[in-house]
Image (spheres, helix red, strand yellow):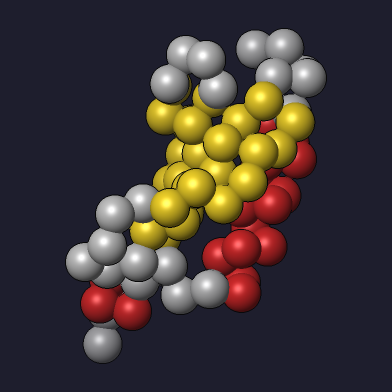
Length: 68
């Protein structure tokens, strides 16, 4: 992967389709932004590599996924 590769960040709330949030340049920037979004929203987030549609990572933050 090239450090200036673009990554698409998506957000998914339960019972909804994923929604595009933003584009980040560089994997480190994308991962840092994903962590920021996870702290702000109770939703799942994931990153796709632009152009290749490679799934990079997903953070699950939905309340129903948490153990009681």
